[in-house]
Length: 80
Image (tube, rainbow, N blue to C red; front, side, top):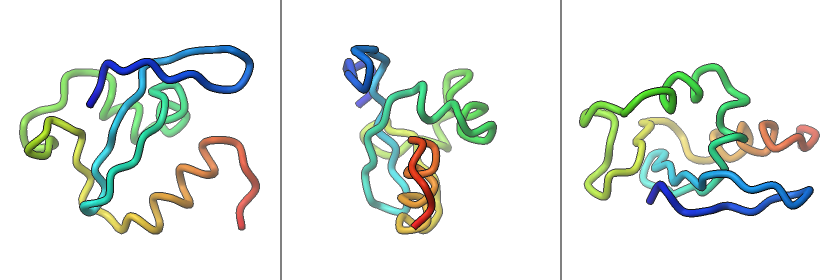
């Protein structure tokens, strides 16, 4: 769930966010997700209950395989 510390690259740390995309759980730093204007808007304020799963994670009703590719790009990797 949200509120866990994520440690990444250059000794920087950020809040770790769990996102449920089509039933698959992804974990990323909030800073990485904010590289997307769409995801930044979802993280900018408290998500409404309609956007949460039963465990309180942000829920996005999309294809998890496609989201994995998007997350890879947000992390700065080249497209496969």
